Length: 299
Image 1: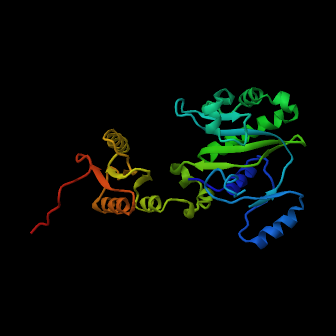
Image 2 (image 1 turned 180 degrees about the vertical axis):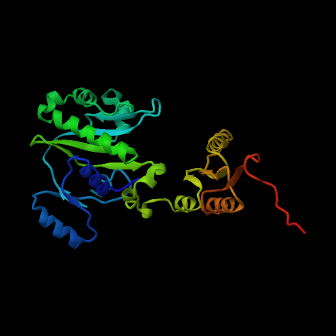
Image 3 (image 1 turned 180 degrees about the horizontal axis):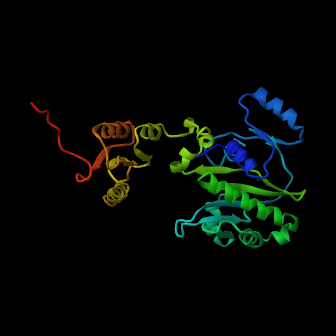
């Protein structure tokens, strides 16, 4: 589950990560009132949508401006190879990290955190020195290390899948500020966090995925034209591979589960047929798990 930037920043503030003063506003009048309260020579209005590149699209709620001296990139996620939470950092803040990784991979810094031990000071110092903060601005070294520890607590305690700051700025006043923020959560851990659940914005989610969730179906919409319905995540992945090997593209991932009933299967069909891109449907049900026989009424 993704949240808006202003929601991500509210979480940052709860965990001691410095952010600009900001507020969600929904009308021009609210924006004018908050801008007056900020009493700042510079303020920024940001469109709140679950998408990147808002600046390029002309969408960059209101918050105070900042005297930027240096922009950095910082995030934490689980490394799929090691299974450990890993900090990703770069001196190329403000840029899309995928572009940096493709064009200048040597500027990507990684620091894995042993979950059995947790974040330690040396982890933060490793990242700080790899970024060259001792040369850029020594005054922010210790606050930077402390901030990484706070981000690690946010990541672990809230069952996040991604915590990203881009850019993390060093101001001319020699302070750190998370100028932009993105947080994604593991859906499987949401039941533990009622406060996070309240941040969900259904208007930003695919209607078919919402309907699938209401019917206890594991569904992810894709860009292909062959709808597929399978029971079991592994079999679903293999089925999608078969579709691609046959020269087509899967329109979705849909796992109805091992305990699927006629009601859940019917719901799955309804969802597949609502996708205008679907030109054909591939059903791959393992009958040893899901009962496929027709039930007969006893006379």
